[in-house]
Length: 166
Image 1 (spheres, rainbow, N blue to C red):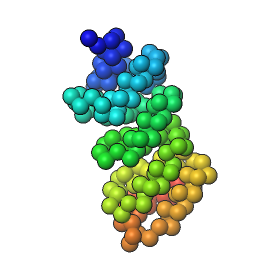
Image 2: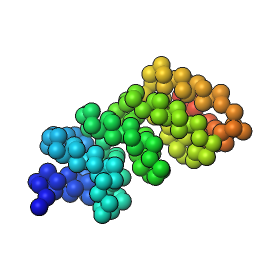
Image 3: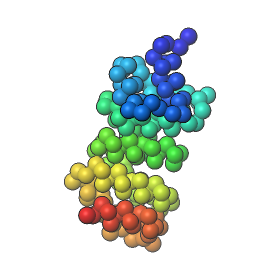
Image 4: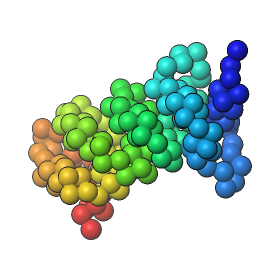
């Protein structure tokens, strides 16, 4: 039998529309550690029977959950092989200003097969985190050889790099 928190969290993550002014992440956090744990487990894909949209919603709400478990979950998810999940996790890392993800993002940018859209999100996230280490990763990526890293030559990636250097 599901607990009250499980029901509330899963109903919230299954919603297609939120009430204006309601921050689902803050609401989940206000329900306590059990609710935060459930949101993190759903984001990690620990409930395989749930619709995909519930998982991606769970990843997105982690952005405003100010809890160590949410931050660690985001750190794991930026490396997810599902680009929908990793992009939402990158956006959550930007919102959290999660500096613990910077090394992971530096490694992600070293993949020659990285999709340009993911590379652009990494650049946006590093810009938002804006620590000396994040700026260093951006500078190194800006100087990277587009022949070695084809995503570096993408116009969208280049535009975000230009914005980050301002």
